[in-house]
Length: 243
Image 1 (cartoon, helix red, strand yellow):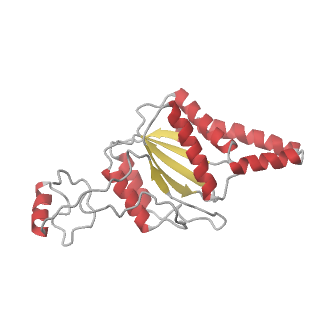
Image 2 (cartoon, rainbow, N blue to C red):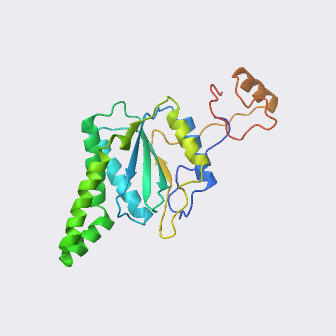
Image 3 (cartoon, helix red, strand yellow):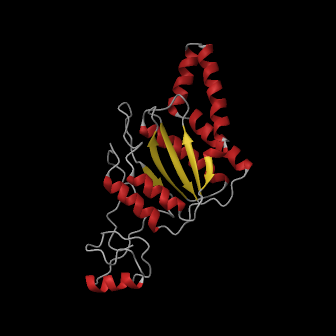
């Protein structure tokens, strides 16, 4: 990667995010392209018919899930947020797992189900049903729990990334497509659209002083596709041995 990319954010705290910005997308693509960790699987976390409309609650659910799952078997990850047509948030998580076993699928289902039923929005609904002694509501909530668990042991929820560079391709495609990134009107506190574990997070990079002629010669030696472009892009990927 060429240039100083220390200004690209991994998600600064203390600022209110209302939409997915081009700067955030650039940081996402830079992160997935720069990491040496191969992400081999993808999880998809989906909410049931009921779902929270507050990003701070969704991030708390995600954190609860990741914390529980990583206690069983530590792994590196990168996640990103999308919205379904019904307005529900859903989250894709790329991981570096080397195996997916039936036991691991059950563990995933347990942790995501647990993350939901211990969430603020779910507990509020349970409390209302209890106070009102609403048997129908209580039965509905119990049925939803069973559905959440059953759905999340399905093989499509946790899949292998088919090609060696599949994760990079998928994230880059996500970054260039506008679909499913528009925040629903009734959704508040959207927060960050993506995040990653510390080992994947973008570093500070380093600066190289050189002339354009010398740099083009360097790119030609690497047989890089942009070496003959009239204008060299600000960020380049697959550039090695920079010194």
